[in-house]
Image (cartoon, rainbow, N blue to C red; front, side):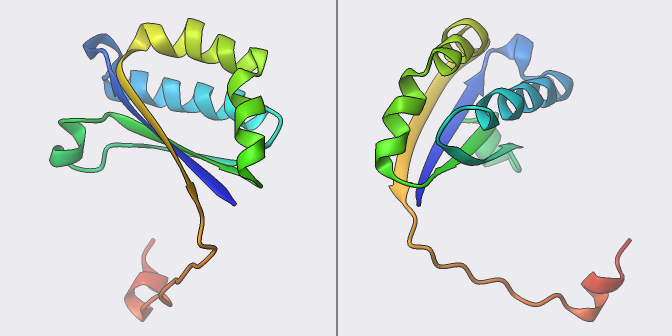
Length: 116
């Protein structure tokens, strides 16, 4: 599996909580419909050190590295990037990794299980 991680620093106008949420929602809607994309996750910066450099992230999963290039050049992806995203961002960084396929989850503690 390939994980493509995209980090975005938004222009000030688009870095409000509401604007970030709208960009996240739109990004998930558009990107999840593209061929080759298995999963899309998106999120806001979680802390001050992160938010000083990045406002949001996108993580896309692909079955293979061969699936990434057709996604990148797909007309709907190009439209999303060129007409929607570029006017809203200051900086973008996209990197791809081969997932090791290993995952470890800790069991919930009793107090976490009872939390509302």
